Length: 383
Image 1: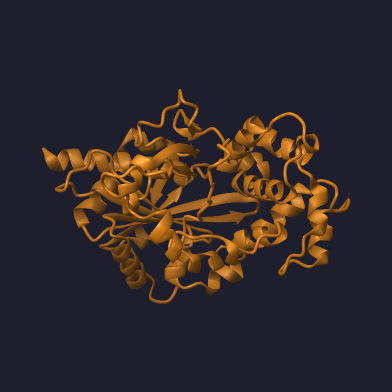
Image 2: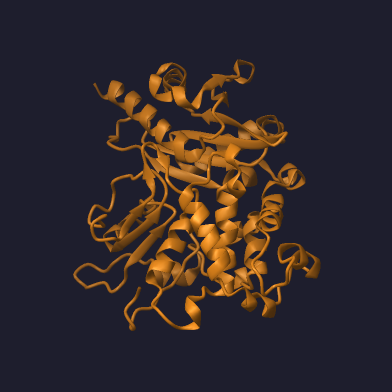
C-alpha cells in the first residue's frame, strides 16, 4: 500500500526500442487496453534525468525503488542501491540490499531449496494485491486490464501449468484461480485494442467478455507470438540474443578474478537454427563484447512432440575460463542435476555447446550454477 501523498511510477526495465521484439508482451498489452507508447522505459530521457538520476550528496532523497523479477539493482544504477526499499522476485537471493529484510515484509523472494517456489513474479504480485485489498468497494474486484495482464504472464511463465514443463506450483494455481474469480472481466468489453481483432477476443472469451477468459486460448495466443518459428528465423543474431538477456555478477569476485560477470540470453529456438544464422559467431562475440561480460551463454528452448528440449551455449574470449567452466559442468557433482552432455562436434576455441538432459532447469537454475562454477574457478586462480 502507499501513503496518500506517494506517487507510484512503473518503469519498464528495458530500452524502449526492445519492446517491439517481445511480441507476446505487445499483444498482451494490446488486449489489455494499454498502448506501449504510453509506458516509461529505462532509457527514456525523463527516466534517466529525473526518476533514476544519481542521488545528490548531502540532500535527503524522497525516492524509493521496488525491484520486481530481480533482486539486485543493475550495475549501471548502483548509486541508487540505498533507495531500494522493496523486492518482489522468484530468483535465487543474491544477498544484496540487506536493509530490505524478510521480517519487514518488504523482501519477498520465492526461491528455496535451489528452485523457484512460484513460476512467475506475477503470482507474487497477485498475492500482494489480494493482501492489500481492503473490504468493500466493487466487491473486492480486480481491475479487468490488470487481471488479464497478470493472468497472461503467469500462464506464460508456468507454461500453462503443464506438468511436463515442471514450472507451475500450487501458488501459481491459486493465483490463476483467484484472478479468474476476482477480476472484473466486464471492464474488458469496453477496450479497443489496435492489434487484436474481434475473432481473437471470441477465442479468448468464448462465453463473452464479461466472463473469465479461456486459459488455453490466452496461453496459445501469447505462446504462439513468443515462439513463432518464422519470427525467430527472421531475427538477426543480435536481436535473438538481446531479446531476453540478463547479466549476473559473481559473488566475492576480485578485480583480478577471471570471471566477474556472466551474461545469459534465453532464445526460443533450437540450437542448430541459432548457430546457422548468418555470421553467427562473429556477431555473438561482438554482442558479448558489448555486454562487457567474462562468460556469455545462450540457452535455447524448443518443443518437440510436446516435450521441452533445452541446450546451452557458452562462450568466452578467455580459453582458460571456457575450459574451467566446462570441466566444472561435466565433472562436478554440483552440476549433476542438470545432466549436461557436450556436443563436441560444435566445439571451437571460443565456444562450447551442451545438451541439457533435465529440461526442467531454466535460467533460474543455470545462472546460479554458472556463478558457482565461476566462484570455484576464481578461488583457484586467486590462490
